[in-house]
Amino acid sequence: MFPCYLDLKWSSFYGKHQQWQAFNHIVFYFGFNVYFLYFIGFSPYSHVIEFNELLWHMQPFITEWPQYFTATNLEWKKLLQPDKYKDIIIDSLRFLVNDQRIKLYAFVIMINHVHLIWQMLPFIDPKDVQRDFLKYTAGKIKADLAIYHQSVLEHFLVNAKDRKYQFWERNSLSVELRTPKTFIQKMEYIHSNPVRAGLCAVPENYKYSSAQFYEIGIDDWGFLTNYKEYSSGIGICSVVGVSRRAIVPFLYQVLGNTNNKTITGGFLLQFNCWCSLAT
Picture (cartoon, rainbow, N blue to C red):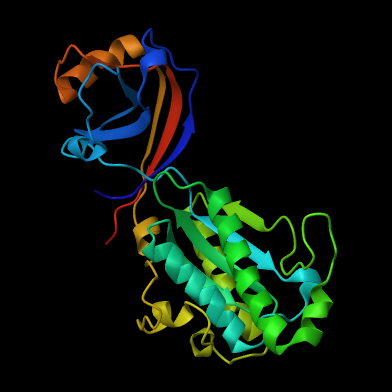
């Protein structure tokens, strides 16, 4: 199944058995060019049904657009100049990919900031990933500085209410990339960073970047996803005013008409679907 990127808006959901719900789950059913978004709930009297049992009919979907993310070291200090600190960034990105929390399309690690294009996988909150990424990398760098470079560590002393040291600027930049044109513009900007900084003659000669992956097809990192998964096809589908009355009979047909299953559904106001098919 190819990736689906959704911009969702919906109203409150209803159901007379809502207080009995064991769980609610957003599910996207794709077939015959018909798109539905709905909630499924089960009363406590039903048998426990694992989500995997539903995958024969449907698959989880990606709800977050790819994001252009920038994290900058405090006051643009050159914290990431040593390669060992760039490697900490790499290790964190590798973990996030292997833990199936993100897709990583592009990155560059400069001496005082990081640019990424990443995308959250299903059921992953971008704020949680950003927080964990910055917290983990700051903690690892702080531990190394405390042992080997105490004089450098003092340059990051802030004595704030919530922290003694600060390594990343607050309010990191995060921009949704909603068109292939914008996506490619940001990726080219990322890859040209080292050239503009005078660190290399061409983007693919800079080690801590995804440029080599795209320019000559070499993946030294093992955690990148080609941007063509995002940009090679587009289709827009909008549905307005899909009622619970109209969709519930379809759900019973898909899931099986079992008396102890309760569709807690609701009212879908609108969704926009951006579909991409890799070539």
